[in-house]
Image (cartoon, rainbow, N blue to C red; front, side, top):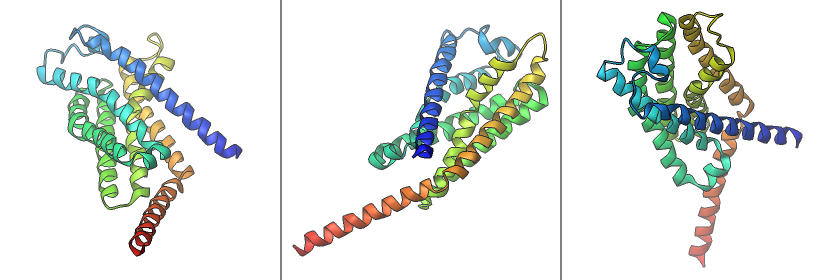
Length: 236
């Protein structure tokens, strides 16, 4: 009972944290609605702000990534999953389309011009590749009916999605302009954020390894019950 309570409390805290940081990200993103090229992150990208293609991908990414965070968050509630199957599928499609059609191409271009030198560029491109790989595999597996593996890849996909939050948390907590070189810190932070999130995702997958299986059994039992009811109805 205590373990179950601990799991529920940890899950609630994680969800609350992501919601809070998503709201804070929306506040940060709002500063770019005026299309000012000398504000926020763009102050560090003056070499490319006059490139219309880079700017287009930048705005596409920042105005859509929060939707990835929020739609992805709803996909890990077992109660929501079992009671709202149709809505779960539609939100899942929004999450997948947002990543594969919008953000993966945008982040690939942005990654080529990333801060942090070669360390930052390779880190961002690796993130983008893993983001696409995990999300595509999640889609393929659910179409094959492999719910357990589908959920594992969704957890990994969402871990990459939330590196945007982890990156900013690490930067705000540890970066000091008078102590660290900005480019080096930025590049290393890309890698650290990815490693931290993937490590947490693997721990979650290992700890809740039987959870997707329970959902699958629940679905099979539900179908079996429905079939039995139909047979009884036909006999009557």
